[in-house]
Image (cartoon, rainbow, N blue to C red; front, side, top):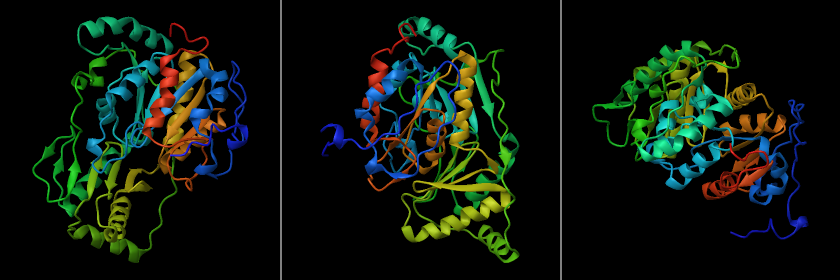
Length: 403
C-alpha cells in the first residue's frame, strides 16, 4: 500500500475541521457534502487536528468491519486480545460506545469491557455506565479484580430501550423466517434447538472468549439504573402495498424456500438476514422474502453489506442512538464532549453525520477509494483503526491524567 498522505502538506486532501469545543454545546455545523473516500485524509495523519480537543473526546465505534474484520460467519467475528486491551485502556480515559447491529447481549459477550456503552440492534437497546464517577470507581476496583481473576463490576448503569412494543412482531417475523427457510429454531437465550439444514442456519450466540462468561450485565443489578435522556422516536409513514403485491407477499410466506448459505441472526430488537455466502442469483428472492415478512409484521427493511435488516417501523438508527449516547454522557458528566465516530457500513453514515454536525470527527473504514461518504477522515482497515485508537489509549490527554 503506497502512503502518500505524509509526503507533505500538498499531498494531504483538504480536511473538514470542527471548531474548538467550549464548555457549552457547540452550535450545529454544516454537514460536508458526500465525497469519495479516496479524497479523504488518513486519520493517522490528523492527530494534530484532533489533539486540541483531546481532553474532551468521546469515542463511538462500530464493531464488524471496524474493530474486527468482516467474516462470512458473524459468530466468528471474535475481538482480538489486542483490540480488547486497547478498548479497556481507552475507556479508562474517555467515554467509549459500541454501536452495532448485533444484539446488545451478544456484543457485550464479544467485547467484555464493562466501562463501555453498548448500543445493540442499531441502537434500539442501549446500556452504559454512569459517567465519569463510574469510570473512577471502575479504575479503583480494577487491580482487585485482576488479582481475583474476574472482571470488575460497576454499581449502576443507564439503559434505554426503543420500540419495545415491536418485540412480539419481531419474534413472529423470526418464526416465519424459521418456517419458510427450514432453519433451526433459536430460543430467546441464543441456543439452537435442533439441527439446521445444509448450508442454512439461524445464528446462535457466539462462542464466549476466554474470561467473558462472567460478563453478563444482569450481574450488575442495581436500584440506580435509569434513563438519563428521553428521546422518543417518531413512527415511520405507513407502507402502502397494492393488493396484487400483498397477495404475492402472502404467497411467498406459504411456500418453503431452500436457499443454501442464508443465515438469519436474531438481534432481539432487529433481525439480520445475511446472504454473503448465498448464490448472487438468489438475492432477489431473498429480498422479496424479507419484504414479505416486513409487510406481514409491520416492520421496516434496511440493508447493509450483504445483509437485509428487519427493524421496528420507527425513525431510529445509529445516528439517533449516537445522539442519545452523547447527550447522556454530557448530562452525566456536565461537560461538552467532542465525538469521534468510526464505522465502515452504510448504516454508519447516519452516525457520521450526527457527530460531524455536533463538531466532532467522522471516520470511514474502507479500502475502496470510490466509496461515497459524509466522513471527514479515513482508515483503510481494522489494523489502522487499532493504531488510531492506541494513540489515545496509551497516553492521557490534557486534563485526562488520573481519569
